[in-house]
Amino acid sequence: MTNDLTAFSIFAIAVVVLAVILVFMGVKSVPQGMEYTIERFGRYVRTLRPGLNLIVPFIDRVGAQMNMMESVLDVPSQEVITRDNAVIQVDGVVFSQILDAAKAAYEVRDMERATLNLTMTNIRTVMGSMDLDELLSQRDQINHRLLTVVDDATAPWGLKVTRIEIKDITPPADLVASMAGQMKAERDKRATILVAEGERQAEILRAEGEKQGAILSAEGRREAAYRDAEAREREAEAEAKATAMVSQAIAAGNVNAVNYFVAQRYIEALGKFADSPNQKTFFLPMDTAGVIGAVGGIAEIVRDSMAEAAQARTAPVRRPSETT
Image (cartoon, rainbow, N blue to C red):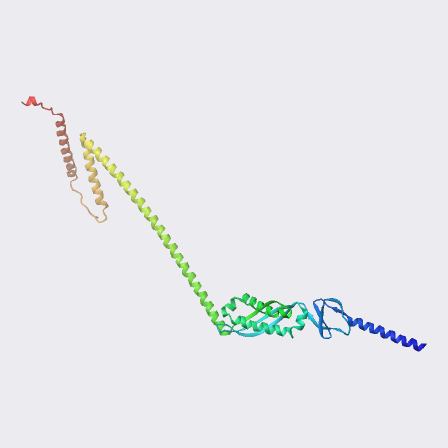
């Protein structure tokens, strides 16, 4: 009886242990961000998602444990010959994410190395078809072309390439010096152009100012000439009026008007001699009374003329019958 109990206890313990082993082998816990492929007799059957999963012990087994999170792959530096035969050093970085664990596990071997070699090859292809100036100024276009080509090539592997970035483009030292000289010459050229443009604008503004000054000066001279002409016209009118008044006085028999008119002209003549810039010395008559006598003689002549005119006006007119 004791032997039977011992054998039963051993069997029960073995069954319990076997059950524990079966549970342990049949239950799989998949962490977040991971996926497991399940193989049955060496053939892929399904994929385990994050969480608690059951498999058939001794028949199913975990084939590959795939990381489904986005990963970063550094592209080592390599030499690239551009279309214009410039040798440059280029490196980059690739961002990718596995979308299909089964394809990533069974469609390609060593997926990271395959992706790296594919990216490096396409970097040489894309950048080798461009000039150096285009490489330095169109980096976004290079990244877009690389992303399109590499993503299409890795799609059968269940891999999604999200970004490809070119980190550094390093031309040779002598080429960098030449580019620096070219940039300096270009900046000097633009500076010279700006200085010349400024001088040209200054000359234009200066000429415009001189033009406006000449116009204003001409308008001033025209206004002055107009005023001078108006003054001379008024002076001539005043002179004509004075002459008319003197003539009327002479006709009326006023001898003093003649004396005033002759004396005024005489004084004006002496004043012009005195104001002459070249004539510093002039002579006056020694006998001033002679001058006055001359003026008086002129006045006597005028008086005699006036008397004759008056007699002619008062003489009676003879009729034809009286003369016969």
